[in-house]
Image (cartoon, rainbow, N blue to C red):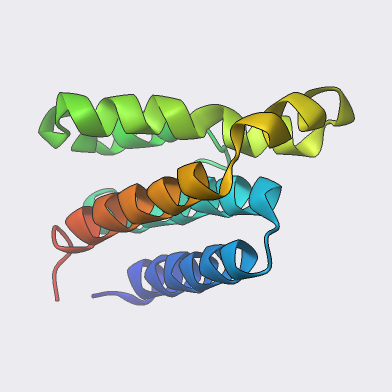
Length: 130
């Protein structure tokens, strides 16, 4: 694994640990935000492995997966999950969306988000060279 890939994997792992900590401390808005970050960074790790150019400085998960070619390998369920995560990055940043988002981020839903994020993260990690 090259240094760029390792960097993104380590950042994704760190963000996953942060998401778990946010769940424990009941900061549900940030569980969702960090789950998005976990997937974004593991997608950038995959990008760094398969493409010579550096990852785009974007937060759009679908575009990252598409540009890296991973989109063709994702299941329908994984694609739906990426769509579900997408607004958690943007909407967590703006007060007008925050209250609405907080209502949807229940403890149970956040646990599910964390589990599904971990499944996707590990699935992508397994596609990286060791």
